[in-house]
Each structure stands twice: as structure tokens, then as C-alpha cells.
Amino acid sequence: MEISKKVSASKITISELMLPSHTNFSGKIHGGYILMLMDQIAFASASKYSGSYCVTASVDTVDFLNPIEVGELVTMKASVNYVGNSSMVVGIRVTSENIQTGKVKHCNSSYFTMVAKDDSGKNVTVPKLILSGQEEVRRFCNALKRIAQKKEHEQHETRFGYTSAESLESLKQYRIVLDL
Image (cartoon, rainbow, N blue to C red; front, top):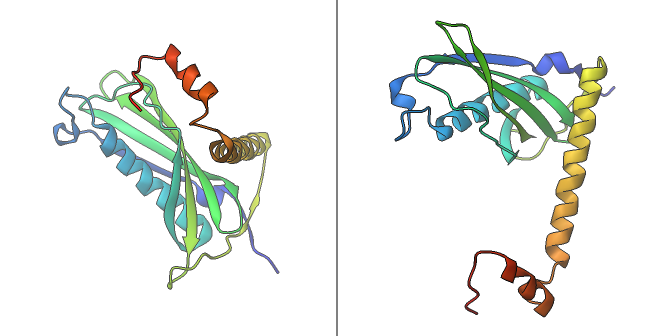
């Protein structure tokens, strides 16, 4: 019998106070530090769901919507939105809270594709995903759309003629100098 699990089996929440040691040169929290935390929560969510060691295969669309300040409490929520055979798409939402005023900002949403591995590094099958509610169905369907768009983009990349006269001519509208 094939194993199935609910999305709730993958839910993880972490919160961390942002310290001066996490800042970039402009005094805001460094995006790379936030990405590291996002990778950790994606690993935790996927590993919790699959029961296996997981690796990051790709990260889709990381938009930093609002800066994070020193002293704010950053909270990340993650859950598996989609499963394939050995892959899972983990959705992550990042918010920051000014702990003095209580003001909460949405700072980032992203999607990490994680792959479950066995002890020898081979892909392993993950449990089927039980969708319980319209929000989980919406997230699953949106993951399907992003996967289809990614495949379409990859196909376009293999077909597009970068060296054709037409393609090179179309580049003249941009702020470049062609020196071929």
C-alpha cells in the first residue's frame, strides 16, 4: 500500500530575532542570510514530510518585497505544496515583525524544489499528498502552473535562435553595444 500524508505533516514555522551581525552594508538584514534560513526551513519541511534526507534542486522566484530591520522578529512558514515522484515543492512565506509596535510586514514568498534521497544518494519516492481544503488545492494548482511555465521556458531556450539576424536586430532597442 502506498503511503499518503496530509500537507499538515510538512508544516514548519521558525522565528528568529534579527541581529546586527546579520546586516549588509546598508544596515538592513542581508538577503543572503534570509536565503540561508529559507533553505533550512525548506529542508526541514521536505524532510519532515518525506521522512528522508532532502537536497535543494532549485529555488523559484525570490522577490525581496520589504527590507528587514535589526531587532525585528522574522517568521518563516513552510509547507509542501506539490509532490512528484521524489521531488516536492515547498512554499515559504517570510514576514517580519517590529516587536515594539507589533507591525508585521510580508517580506518574501518563494518556492524551493526539494528532492528526497536515500543513504546512498539515490532518489526515493515520497508519499502522495492529501489535499485537505481549497487553499491546499490552490497551492497545488499554482505549483503545477509554475512547473509547466518552467518546462515551456526550457523548451524555448533550446529552440530560440540567438544568432539569427532577426534576433540580433531586435536587441538594438536595449541599452547594449553588440561587439561580435
